[in-house]
Amino acid sequence: MRQYDRTGPVSKGVGRGQIGDVDGDGKADAIVVNDTGITVRRSDGTKFLANEQWATGLLARSYHISGVSHPNIYFADVNHDGAADAISVDDNGVWVNLADKINHVFQPATNWTGGAFYGGNGTFVADVTGDGAADIIAVNRNIFTGNAAISVRSSNWSSFNASQSWPAVKYFPTTFADIDGNGAADEVMDLGSSGLWVGPSYAGSFNFSKFPAWYTAPYGFINYSTYYADVDNDPNFPGAADTIRLGPWGVSVQTSAGSAFSSPNFGSVNLPMLGHHDVTCH
Ligand SMILES: [Ca+2]
Ligand SMILES: [Ca+2]
Ligand SMILES: [Ca+2]
Ligand SMILES: [Ca+2]
Image (cartoon, rainbow, N blue to C red):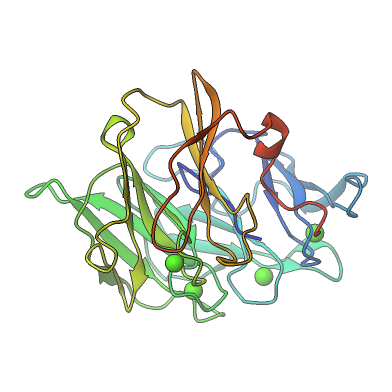
């Protein structure tokens, strides 16, 4: 199960719900983070079960990143046990509360970076190395070129490795999703009226020259929001995330064919499909 949205898998509002498979059974669970802790309703494949308190009180270090006073929590599996862990970022580092999928709690926070690591233009959690464990990515803008400067701390399943610079040449907004379906999240830029670009993750860089044709024509108008998820489950391109756009027209989808997108399919997707997380594990 992989899921992304334009801003990355980030919650930035007290009490805002998120989705993640915290017990590692392949079914996405509903998660709410607020001042009293983290509450989970696990999916049993047909419904969400009763509330479970997976953490009590403010998660350690989940506040106060450069004056931002809201939770900054991501849910993704960083230690490769199949269960989504809670990851929070502050001025002192990236902290992980590992999910205990047996006892249904989050363990106390430990520092996985040993120092500050976040991006002025966004901090993202995605598996860009393709080993099945989520990595942490900081995006900044190069003030000289205007291009994105991307730093990656890959997970070694018990901490994040030293920061590496991953070459990237394009623009903002940037997010990360596995568009070509090789298991590693790629850099994706939705430039709205200027089209969509993909930089496939390839040997430690986002390689825009690998698939130069990977570009979609401009829509010609602004969409409200863009999501990336494998909605067509095409067996020829397993795991390849498609592009889902919301706009004045409703919903449109451009399916990924591994190295190119289809043209926009307007109105072909029912709104309920936007619950693009696999809660049933079917
Ligand atoms: Ca689950
Ligand atoms: Ca985990
Ligand atoms: Ca990884
Ligand atoms: Ca990929």
